[in-house]
Length: 419
Ligand code: GLC
Image (cartoon, rainbow, N blue to C red):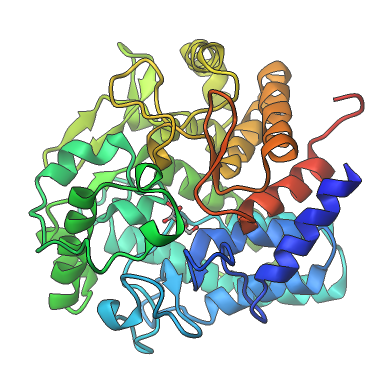
């Protein structure tokens, strides 16, 4: 709808800091986040092709010499954020974090490439491909040192789904750093009950300090981290990105890669539970708790729905339970918290990934439900960071860039007549 379309455009413009977009102007996240930027490019692409590319370029300008693209790039004053660049003290510039985030970039670049067939797009695509190749190779080198075909996250922040109950057990192995409650700034900008707990934060910081003590060396980090998980959501996003990157390499040509990227997500299927589960790679045990990541294999491979019809049954169960889907954690489990971040609320960016897989698999009824819920959440409650799946209340930061971007993108690419 025009009114919301215009509002979404003005949110992106307001959150633009000149070549990169902050997640929200509320002060909650005063820097550039990796997957936020890529997803926000999908929004910019609806009205400004060049600006969409700038978002990707500014992120990739922070690529480390070993190929990693960090999860945060600090540009200006980051004093309202904790942990900021001084705490991380990471990378050659000391202006980035020292871990990564879900690699959606190749999928976004493929979208831009296919949407705009200008010579500008072709040039930009050709420039970014070698950087994407190095980043994807980095994952297999740095985060799959046992060569399983599945890459591991070594910090909950790397998953993008910071406090999902899926990490609880592994995180409980991590000692708590001395309390950082007095240093946290996030609870000044969002309600405490909508943010991760104090104990979680102290553990996040313990991991950060440990990685910093080891100069972020990938070899060391992989073996010393007490938190190491082959996250099904992350691996699905990477598998999809691998496919999209292979497509681009074929289109543009000339960029050989040493790795034929494995697609090992199927190893995470649990036939008894009828779910894909993440794997705790320290204990070598599946984590039999379904977060929303358990559905993401359909984003990588829509064929997963035909192979495993149970996935649809679970999706319908989750949707039947609440007014607005899809919640980020199994609503029938005791850990479900409808207002706390990744422990229950709805996030539009994940809804898009599910819709994409569902549409490709021909499962339009569920995709349409997710689309309707996503657009209604915004139109009735505003452009919030995430939403309560019961009544739809907006939670976390207001005027959120990726929510605005998803609105623009879904409206353009997914909405059909008469919704
Ligand atoms: C939180 C989210 C993460 C996001 C970041 C900035 O840490 O969990 O996914 O990238 O905020 O929006």
